Length: 282
Image 1 (cartoon, rainbow, N blue to C red):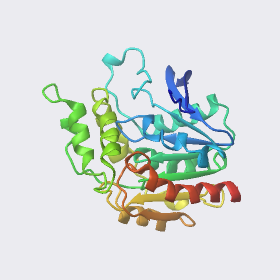
Image 2 (cartoon, rainbow, N blue to C red; image 1 turned 90 degrees about the vertical axis):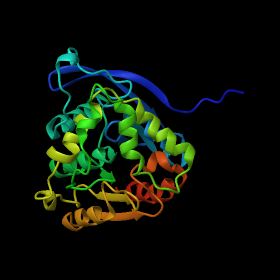
Image 3 (spheres, rainbow, N blue to C red; image 1 turned 90 degrees about the horizontal axis):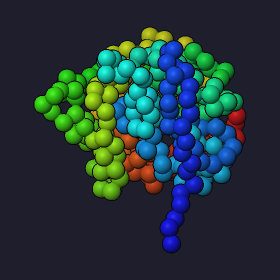
Image 4 (cartoon, helix red, strand yellow; image 1 turned 180 degrees about the vertical axis):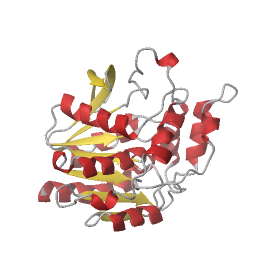
């Protein structure tokens, strides 16, 4: 017999930076709102395993959405005349606008990679608006280690190059099924989107000079990094945790840069205790 997953998908129109954007959003479960932010160059499919886990959805209303230009969300009208480049201001405004449009009261925000970076910005600037933030593979400063020009060239398949670049960030122990599921989403990315995301991730999003100002008594901060992550390395995660007093950092053994999608069974061992602590203490 056919089996339906408990995930419901729909579109919402909301204004971001003066443009009305058509955003695709999925949700499952009930309880404390938990907003999940996908990685650069990918989309919200990365969180499907969390959204089908009753241990999470029995306590949390899990929501995830495709950023404009990503997945099933549309780019703005006139996108052919625009170079996509994600800035810190635009990213923050998008997440804030989504939470307001969905009428979420003190949600938990969990992001991975560039999503893990932006949640720290949100904790710094809007600490009373969020119950807690969870940065997966997120640090307050990173360094580029490949040439992003390869991601947007007329003579190169940008999706395959993007998948090739990130493939080495998946832990060798991660199941082949989920490795290729993770990479498939990268292969489907729009032209120049991954490159535009990396502008925020590697250039505009640095704030290690201000991360010491995050008040974890107002907004608890959790940092989880995979031991095989060559982008947001465990060392960079620990350095960030040292600057954010009161934050809690965990290095996930056997994990790479995409914990929620590359090895969902192993990831739940790390995320369930965090979600339980947030639920009990806040």
